[in-house]
Image: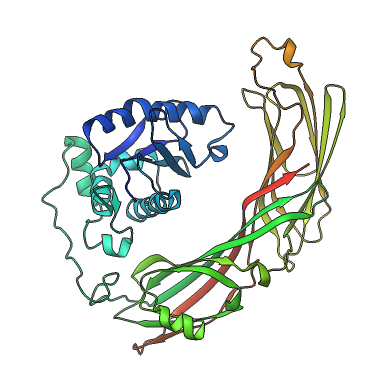
Length: 437
């Protein structure tokens, strides 16, 4: 994998000018990426309803391909001109976003500018000649010093990075992700099992496709050099598992248990895909739709209620309904939550509900709208326009629920005599969850 250029863009502004850019190519390619590709990509983003609807892999003008991800209000974009697997670029961009968040906390245009020098140093260590070297923050801490208040003030006032700041010692031991001699006053280990459901649901609420993937996120504050052993319930459901380098793969392959020496701080222990054979197609949220039309007048009615969640509440429920570009006279009624209507270039209806309980009645949303005739539109496109809404995009999260039934059965510490405080949380979220009608 070779990346020519990497851009960090602000997704909230209309210009989407780069906040930071880093190049590993010749001058001509740098000029093409900065002057041609980035403005063209910004125009492409403005042509879609939202950045989430943009294709992650987009063919750039004058050759090359843009691969991007959005995290919060920031877009990370890589430009490639040679044959490269897009997933490798996405993995690199994800690692860059996580490393920056680990170093500076809340990521925004302002915080990126405040820590400009640190982020450039991180990019220099993570990528060499366009090839990924490491995105492990435990390793990066030994290469790039974390920004301090003094360095940020001097940087912002003078525009000069603190080159004389003490550089951290590089860890060359057998466990490069963990330094020697770590000490904490209290020893704690927390686990978050975060799962995502990708599904396509028909108008009657039946799932046409159903897929579960997830991450095991950990936060470790342990003294010394602890050896951890994690046992999972329903571990046979895990398929296509990607582990952190600290995991000893032999133990997992032989016993389906995870043995590892953890990094200090936050890290992702594993990413997994749940095997289809071990899954029950049980949707935590039931969504149905009924569409009708009379001439150019259309009505869509949605019903939302709790599904199989083990008695847990569903939080932060959202439903986004893109409407035809020629839609007007949009009227909305809802029985719960709040709704907003956007009638600009890309009309859409957004419906949000704070929480839905297992015994709550089904919430209803009714959308009425009319569609202008394409022949009567002054700016009619030569391409045929959609005459009716046909899909909705769903978001939700269920704290305490595991869609794959994968849970942490036990967590033991070896080679250290102290006791640790342990905690495990589960949450299932909507990934790419679509309702088609």
